[in-house]
Length: 132
Image 1 (cartoon, helix red, strand yellow):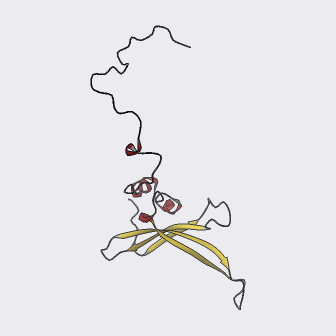
Image 2 (cartoon, helix red, strand yellow):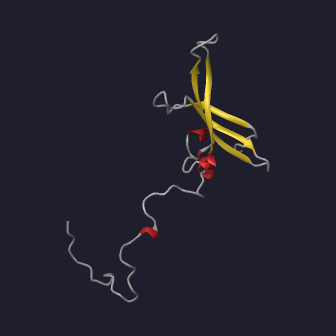
Image 3 (cartoon, helix red, strand yellow):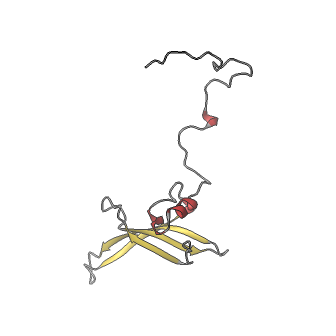
């Protein structure tokens, strides 16, 4: 049975991909229900902080941030999806606004398409010798 997220819940795991102190110590997914009853997913990043001053100095606490998944282009398959099987991660990826990579067809400024009937070199006889 596929995992069904419960509204207004979250799953957070130790970040085993943490490279330095600036990376989150824990990552996960937050599931919030919107006004229409749809579940909106958020990335959760948590850091372990320590109080430096005052009566509670030395105590540790979590500090963090959340980012809405569908507002992050190309990020829907990041660490926060580790609590779901790979197939579900791929299905949750947003393809509505993919990031631009390279040039698109409208940016092409090369020669125009060949006219119908022009020889493209496809009808040339094959050479018998192999060059290697």
